[in-house]
Image (cartoon, rainbow, N blue to C red; front, side):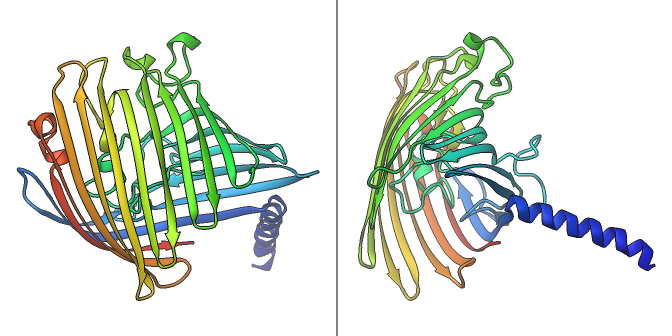
Amino acid sequence: MIKKLLPAALLAALSFNALAASNVTLYGVIDEAVTVTKHKGESAVVKLDNGIYAGSRFGLRGVEDLGNGNSVGFILEQGFNADDGSEAYGGKAFSREALLQVKGNWGEFAFGRAGGLSSDCGTYTILHGAALWTSYYTDGNMASAFINTDRMDNLVIYKSPSFSGATITAMYSNGTGLNSTGEDDKKWSKNSHYYGIGLDYAHNDTVFSAMWEMLDNKDLDAKSTQLFTLGGQQGFGNWTVWAAYQYAHNSQMLPGWNYAGQGNKGVSQHAVTAAIGYKIAGGEWKLEGNYAHGKSNSTNEKYNIWSAGTAYEYPLSNRTLVYLYGGYGKANKLLNTSSYRSTFNSWTLCSGISHSF
């Protein structure tokens, strides 16, 4: 018995030493909530939902010091549905992020899969200006009115060193993978590309970002989408205020990562969000309002989106948080037609817990 256990113990020790030498960290989030949701024209649904405050995930993060301020690292992160154990995104071993990073005093490069500048996803997003971010539900958060980019494949990312609190982040994808034909397996002129550059600033209680992004939509044979987004937040003791603005031109997507289905010119829109937060009773209460006004560029049909959300977040510890959320969203004209009505007209109530490890 001892002879059988010794090789196993030796292998475990060697594996542990290898991980320690490479400085590899296992991390993750498990987030679940009980929710009540009602979409226009449908019955209310009560269910156990997943990834409301933060997407459930597990990941590996590692770094090797090369000396002289230089290092090589990686991030491998997969999402899952904690309510049933299934993959959050089918077909990818690491759907949330898969990055190789090279860092130094000159800045950092990253290569692989990650979220775009305005995605509110992962390591290199620089989105600011909303109390509820893209968390919770798209009947009350920023994504109910803004057109945010998503996670993309084949990215090359550069982030500059900090200059008095300001950094520049630039991104390029040679094949976004956002659609079934969107990878970089064709000649350059046929691949679907993403370009983005933005400024991010943080100093004390002041945070601000401004960015430009373009998706050339070559895989969809559509006009290029351009997104101009800026936003920030300012703290005043127990109070925090947030605000953001976006202009989207020729977008193939609507808010909430919903396909527009409005021809090769898509939709164009203006969107704003404003929010306040107040620290009270050991937690923080947040209230956010969102609005978008846009039109279909093919039919000239217009639409308006209004939404409001509120949440109370209470930390039980440094790694565990409980939350309450309520949101209400409404849209008219084009988005109140049969194709979109239930998506953009809804309300949600939920109570949940989020644990990080």
